[in-house]
Image 1 (spheres, rainbow, N blue to C red):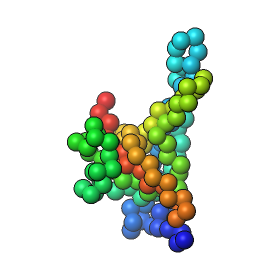
Image 2: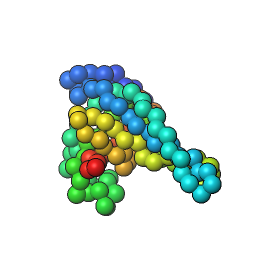
Image 3: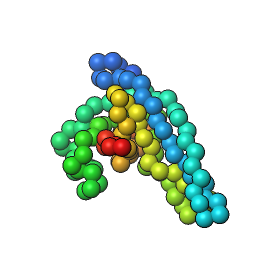
Length: 121
């Protein structure tokens, strides 16, 4: 396989730094107690291409979205019914917050592809 990870640091390909907020929750006495990890990441960020719309969940297809190509392991969140769970990662980039809605693991080629929709808070 061809390792494409070197392209993720090329400024001509859209290389940029961004922040990832990962919200973790712990269930305790019927309540969810939140905590947040603030992580630094980098990769290529591009406006969403029209042909990628079909990969978005139906309810997010009307939202503005970005495509992110990174080595950082972005997450859609996890909830196995245990004591802890997490929600989808938030990407802080270009003055906006974006919620990860799709992650495609292309680690065999050296990257992860994610689609994220703009959050309106």
